[in-house]
Length: 598
Image 1 (cartoon, rainbow, N blue to C red):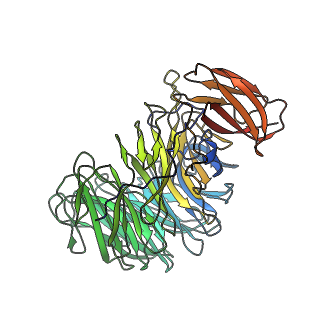
Image 2: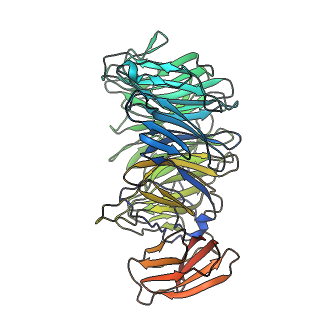
Image 3: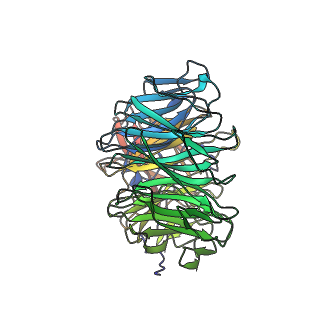
């Protein structure tokens, strides 16, 4: 086994991502905030959000034309551009679920609500080659008022335990059919929940999730031999909603449990899957031997189009905590890219090692043969967390995650810590052989106003590749956030969904663009957009101040001024447009993109 530390990136990365608003210490993830350095903003395209009383986006899919489809759960009165939806717990409401279509530039085209009980959830969305949109989620019902209503007479009845729904809509947002998998035991004692959905080119639609106790599909019973032990399941349907098959793991010992989380299409017409399990499980007669440790282990594998197990591999580790499953990457040749957690003794089925860092990148070929296992970074006291992966057809893989409150070294690149009490997020890139391309800070929770109680929360839930080669990120936020020249504001302590488009190419700093950041200082630059005055304030003052230089987009200096701890720049004489503000002290500097209004 070839164990390698990541190779050096372009240059040591050290800058201060700037964010105007007060950020919650446990803030999760945001890519492309307003006061990120200009090197990242050059890759930013657009951002949009919902409005009103709140919405949480859970997944996004993109069609061949670059239109995106987001599934979300909303509450109260929620707006998507000029479309208003109401979920108020009455017989006349429209929620709580919604499918929203956006243009390639981020404009809302339509928003189709799904009416049901407030506890209903929507988890996955995918698109087939004909532009048909499939969504999946979980729902439970106790009376006629709370049936799941997709409009145009398409209604699903259910029972008092959480069951599966799978539905298909056309490109105009009109649902054509909906079907269900019913949990059949006593209310509240069992469930079946889908977490992901994919559609292949052969009229097949797959869902994956977790099931506890027996279920019913069109009068057929499944999962009847696993009392009190949740299991991983995969089900397949035709594109017209007809049921094809249902497969699941089984408890092969005393405490075998499992759950499925994510799917991707495999070259053989079947699917790759990922999930977690404990102890000893089996699938169609093939058993994973009892694990050495009691932590949750990761399982990845491939199923044929008929549901047969082609192969599966597993990873377990000692120490505190276990493995987790989320979006993984698949390249154009069908190779699979997965991140795993390293903690003490770590085992990959046929090999074991003592982990030097807490996160590794693993590549499997389409037959399940492991190609490499490589550390995703070089060193860091607290390590990193990876929230999602995305792989391009050429095998270039992007990992998005956080690194806590200690510096993390990626080869020659270092992720700095601006606020020792906050969290910090990054995107890292790797070639198809696992070589580190570079790393770039994305966000840090520097600004927490503990006195006023004003915070901002962000969580990213899915990232996809657009036909233009950019990345599309969705999730939800609370409070205020900034993306390029766009300001996002949920207007209070509610959560709104966001959708952002940015290009990862050119993200990594180069020797000609990487500069030292202003030491031990966080700067506030506001408002943005600005009109007549731009204010500049430092949290921790320099003894001698800094030089503020304002440049137009042709690189010409239009204003230069020495600024103190708290100062301002007059912009009244400048025409409206985009500018770059550069704050410098000696050889250290940081830049911001500024929009000047009329």
